[in-house]
Length: 340
Image (cartoon, rainbow, N blue to C red):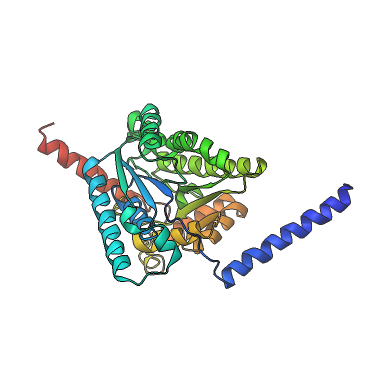
């Protein structure tokens, strides 16, 4: 094709992509069904992972829950089973005729729990093999597990830095390598990367966390391009980048008090509902709140000194310092209790 003609076609497609994106803002796309599909969630024992599990359960997905904490993972599974029972009772009381419910009765749904340390490659691969044998192939993979060290760089033990990178970034490679081959074979699946706004822009005091989330974002974007290049349009990807979420992970983090009422920490339930809407409508990326899109854009075009000036005005330059101080105090208290 003549290069000028091809350039015209590309320009038209780019403009058409803007039109479609704008239309989705005005007209809410129909959500797809995940009923009966195997959905695996890492870090399902608490926080966003637990809420994702409950949301997928309400949509009659068959759930596989991974967490390093067996007890909290079983607690999440108990909540999921309660939802399944409620749906089964409602289905039994309802008149027949709903084709989807008849085909996928809630009473046939199950939840499987596995104790897995996603920071250990061999543990991920061996647990994935168990899932394939005991449950089946995974259709929806939600890479959610995450940790934070809570130390300034020069005070952070190397082991904690490595742990943060392994869990927040490297684990995404291993879980995807474990379950993507079957998705490629079937040309069907969905991979969700739960990253952070700190994977799009950074702040002081959490170098390891920011690096791990930037890595997760880079991995996700490259994977998305690889799937497009392979013309595997049946495999969808969604990148989730929320602002600070009130799960306790960053307890104590504060921006400027005059600004905080306009940009408070996100409620976990709101964050997950927004993410679920993006996942079920095959949205490639979701930043919550939408202001994060603007912050990311401005960070990309403004001079670094201008970004620093804005950070200082917002109180975002040292927003993690109270959180780090609390972590340090808690560590000191634990050491004192243990007689160290």
